Structure formats: C-alpha cells, structure tokens
Length: 121
Image 1 (cartoon, rainbow, N blue to C red):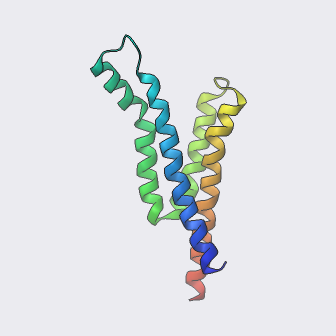
Image 2 (cartoon, rainbow, N blue to C red):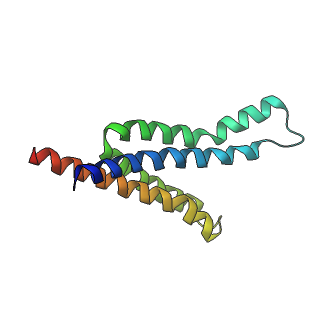
C-alpha cells in the first residue's frame, strides 16, 4: 500500500469514527420533552450519551492502536445487534451496525498497512 493510500485509510477511519460518534449523540435529543424539568432533561441527556462517551474513549485508544478499533467497532456492532434484535426496523440496523463494521474494517486495513510498511522499512 502506498504512503498516500495508507494515510487516506488511516484518516478516513478516524474521521468516520468521529462523525459516527457525533451521529449517535443526536439520539440524546429525545430526552427533551414539553413536561420535562431542566434537571431531569440533563440527567436523561447524560444517560443517553453514555454509549457516545464509551465510543469516544475507544476512538482515543484506536487513534494510536488501530488494532483496538478493528476489534472494538465490530464487537460493538455485534453487541448492539444482539441487544436490540427485533426492536428496530431493518434500516435502524443498517444505520448503526453498518458504519461500525465499516469503521472496524478501515481500522483493520490501517493497522495491517502500517504493520506491513514497518516491516519493509
């Protein structure tokens, strides 16, 4: 893999993981309601953002250890699929698990490419 394609895969995996975390954080907006007090809404938003906080921690580790992202993102996709089975329409699974698997594959490619170029140099 050339240096440019290695750089593209590395930064694409990182950028997509950040965009995906931002996408997941949008689901915290359903904590607000017309009859919800301010502190109840704050607590609900924080509870809704727990998966995003975990994902940000995974992104921070995967930034320096791409193999971790290659394992964690598909694992999260599998956990979400198992725990949410039957609760979502098929589009929900596509928009949640699909990007996580894709990001995991990109981290895997980034790790493999960095590993193979380290051996050559």
